[in-house]
Length: 267
Image (cartoon, rainbow, N blue to C red; front, side):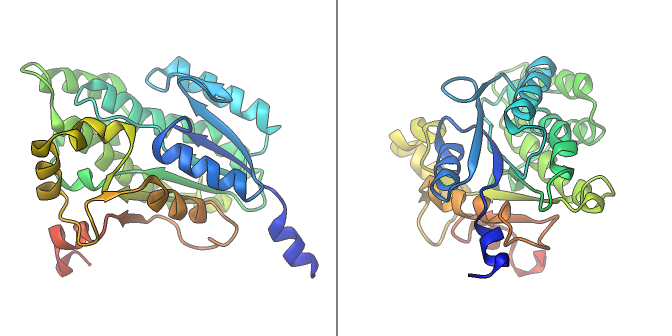
């Protein structure tokens, strides 16, 4: 076996947020099965216990992950997220992801083949609030949370989940080609899942009304409910050595729903 092939088999150190359940757990399992060192980050039952909804929780999570990694990280799979239709969606799905990745970026830059990937959502196509989006794009968390509170005055606001996922996808697109990321040799992408059978979607899957609503919102042509590993496999590939040049992309893994919703003119 050649030296190049040996190098490709060397374990990598990959940080996975949201590793205690769902897509994150599936990605962590696949990475460990391949022989990689996985540093899990979640609110419980993992290597780094942290609350990514707060600035203190994010910075603490970065510090612990860097310590466990020995200062160099080869990949980050940012899966942590929720769908509360409250300001928590903005705190975790956007600012939690962005601040955690920015904190890990110097350690990624020390890797010879650094990779990062974020979980967005097909929901990013389902509605937006321009004021919330502008605040996120400006990385202004107080302003974004103030807008989130306005949107929830009359109850839960679906636009907070869809808006947080759109904002993080846009952040990936703009950051990936920057000097900080591509200039340091770090690939940065997003995967937009359709409806996935995880604990987060259990309530919706439990009712006929919820299932019908999901099928209307996400018109998948390959079955509405995807298993977590259907998302985990592309996430793992995107942080592998095999992904040498794919960056700045939002890849929808949704059974064709995005193509149905946006049509061929979206290309």
